[in-house]
Image 1 (tube, rainbow over the protein chains, first blue to last red):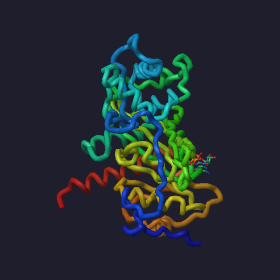
Image 2 (image 1 turned 180 degrees about the vertical axis):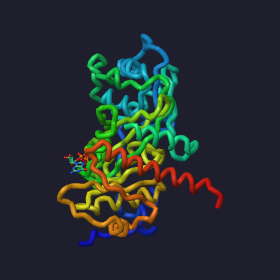
Image 3 (image 1 turned 90 degrees about the horizontal axis):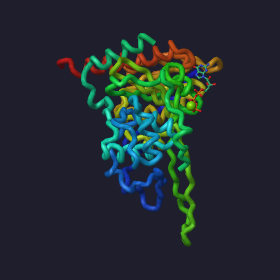
Image 4 (image 1 turned 90 degrees about the vertical axis):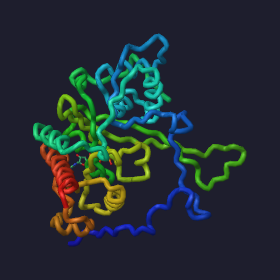
Length: 132
Length: 207
Ligand SMILES: Nc1nc2c(ncn2[C@@H]2O[C@H](COP(=O)(O)OP(=O)(O)OP(=O)(O)O)[C@@H](O)[C@H]2O)c(=O)[nH]1
Ligand SMILES: [Mg+2]
């Protein structure tokens, strides 16, 4: 029995960049549901950026902000905040942008592949996995 | 938005709190077709009960006249499971299990770009469902390993037949795994880390 064979996509089969869509072919339009019109005014937050509260919620905090500040007494990723608050990731990033601007939370940037510091990170992860 | 009132929000259990020394997190993506074992793998190695993050998007009615302002948008919810492994007091690893349909990936900005690497789970009964994912990871330059989930009634192919069927470069690891077993899932992640390590070595060694 032989398995089915994958065929590599050729460059011509690559999706066309936006704006170069063939005339008459309506591209599927997908929108993320958030209030913000532009991404530009939102903080750069990864799913695994760690968020830590700097202070207790001030009187002026909205219920969402207060809940969020209570959750991140200990460091918590944006993904975990989204899960516990039961709010979409995009909405959580909007809330966090406000809290960061008000200096109520601190964000600890993730380690991303492009910026791999060195082998010691990979060694640390392998060591950590070995203990599982 | 159905925001729960703050008294009803259940946060992490005390034992699930990260230490305040946690400085940075990294992520690994587990990707594969429908029902291939993504959630099972996340759950078997995670130190916390797996969580779900959701994103809602609207899809504009395509090719439908929207005269008179009639709204033909439909909302779709896309969910992603994830788990966590504390590596050291400073470093945390997150695992995201995400469906193979790449048209949803944009929802989570930089999910693949920022990830250390990916595990592509495959089920030999439905190899084709992984073809698209593999192509996309190659195009985006995301390092990945293939994990063959051993379902009892699945055809078993020699690894090298799988490699040629999937048209994979010789260096890409192919491992067998049982996503239900923690040790097996851990070994799969370890295979990915070793592969990343070997990539690092070749990148920095003098030519
Ligand atoms: N025999 C065997 N069964 C598995 C394995 N991994 C998962 N399963 C079973 O396969 C079924 C589907 O697993 P899930 O983890 O829900 O798969 P998934 O990829 O998250 O599925 P969707 O999120 O629905 O796409 C479950 O009943 C698992 O118990 C495996 O390695 N071996
Ligand atoms: Mg699942």
